[in-house]
Image (cartoon, rainbow, N blue to C red):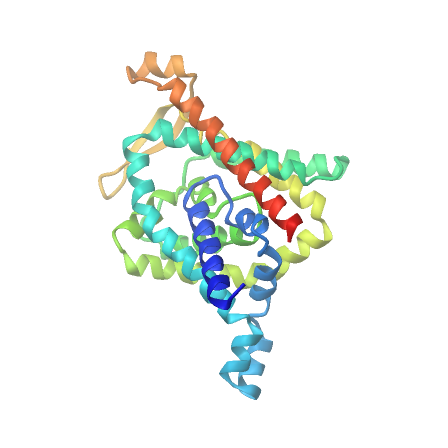
Length: 312
């Protein structure tokens, strides 16, 4: 394959990762894994370190660029950013106008991610079971807690970026899903669509610091305690399903300093209960159809990726 074609293919892989991380449910790390660039991505991220600065001083810019696999990172992250900025407005609009259908699709995506990660577990012994239970309880605790909301705290934006970027190197959980859990998803999506550059700069700085700080640790964790780590992720995703359940009743609402309504707590409902309480069509059939479509889409992409890896 020519260099131009290889770069174009890598750009589209990055675009797929960006699209995945815009949607709460699919992991950009999973897309990297199934597209065959996961290990190169980890190695490239780990190479951005103090040793790279030494190479820069001794051998110049060109050698440093090759040391960190700069061309690979540049093309990949160009695809990611292009996808994020082109899809953010569409996702924000869909969430505002068709929340039941969108959250149903997200629900299916997360179910598929659970199935995918569970398939990677070779055994289910006591450590794996304990890790899965712990992950489930942690996600339930976060999902049932009042969501965090941005006021004037730039530190929260910075920390949100540092947490969300971990999804880049953890197959199975998306950065946008982490933002949903901590209540920052609408804020970041609004910043992207409105081009709020100061907020995005702080968020990007958090992403960069989080990526550099956690890449080595997460890589070591997966290599040393792979089964337990994957079990923890599976439990985390299982518990997270309550966050994206489409039919809910707002139990407590507050108004922030911008005049926006913020749901402090909610109760999960069946489609019938939702219709009776709200008078809104629960759209049960299309919602269930989108759940199934989300499951089929993710598992289908993973199956295709496994076939391509075997051929390669």
